[in-house]
Amino acid sequence: MVTIDETCECGDIFASYLLIIRHLICEIQSHFSKRWGIKRKKRRGSAVFKKITVFVCLFIWGVNSAVYAQDLRALARVDNDNSTIADLSYREMQVELELSQPIPYRIFTLTKPNRIVFDFKEIDWAGFSSEKTLKTEKVKSLRFGAYQAGWSRMVIELTEPMILDEVEMRTDPDQGNARMVAKFKLSNQDEFNTRSGIREEAGWDLPKPIDVITPKQRQVGDAPLVVVLDPGHGGIDSGARSGGKLEKDLVLQFARELKESLILTGRYKAHMTRDKDEFVSLPARITRARAVGADLFISLHADALKSGWATGTTVYSLSDEASDEASKDLAENQNRADLLAGVDLTQQSDAVATTLMELASVETQSRSDLLADMVVSGVAQSIGRLRKRPHLQAGFTVLKAPDIPSILVELGFMSNERDLINLQNQEWRTKVIEGIILALDTWSVEDAAQGQLLRQ
Image (cartoon, rainbow, N blue to C red):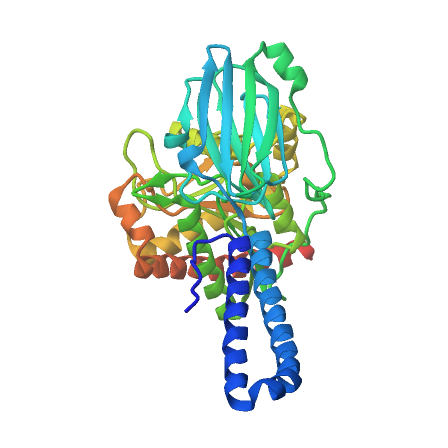
């Protein structure tokens, strides 16, 4: 009996199928010889042989086509055991990645802070870890993950400026895998600044959305309220980590459940800035909200403190001055997400933030503050426990839409054991959702009444 080793390569599989054909032909020849004799075999057997040969060849073609099609569709995988970021000398560093197949890539550097950015055709990062890969003191941090549709990104934050010296993608023609080797050398800040920045290349960047600030007509209660939910972080930006859980996953789950509950009421239309594990820049989140005609914007987070102690749900609205030092630190941490993900912010001056703050009208700000107060009240009724100061203010970039009432809900602190358990508890999440919907019901009626007065 002919068998096929499941671990053999495609060429070996084809050879094994030829052995099967040979075996089948011998069996058929023997069968016809016994039944019809030599003379009848030659006449009828030849026709049968032709049919069998055509059938088996088509079968082999189909099998091998499927095998190769599967390989082409599969994501490239990173072999962490054979991938390192290590020193070649005190002036040189090498990034070596073992990949299951060759893929398109590009490398560039960004400043403030100094970073090396690798963009790849989408990669499966399963099993890859910075702890196992980093073997140099020249790297401050390493981040990796999905960046935008079809593309992955790895960001190396440097302790000192380094520039690309040489790079190559070596491919093994027999095995089909590839090895990327990129060498970097120490530089000075001036040279690093000169070489840094993203060069626009066809096929790498999605079309940039044109965000024309056109104030949305204020809702007056004559149509379902359009609510945009913004699950924080995503893709390469995982947010806080604790107990093996990632903030980006917990808030995405909550946002999906809240969206479904809002739609089921029949009083709201709900959208999300992301509905999968993808990176969305902070300005793009506002753009997506405006694109669907958002009446209000709710950003969802679950932070973790590096020091100190905090617990409970907190609701933030926008202010150019933070309520306290902790709120300031939290806002700075959330606003840094674009930097950590390798977004080039060098072309944006500090005046941008100032201009946005000036554009944010007193009317929109007061509506946001009222919404925050009512969400605090609604959630308190549902779960009975919030932070001592549940409504705070800080300069979150994602809340700076000048025409959309916006709040940020810190569902809890992953650094607190009880909060982390609550975030994973279906019953607790349902109660918080009920509190938020209660608040939106109250706010929408009062906000609509004020809007009607302003129209008169």
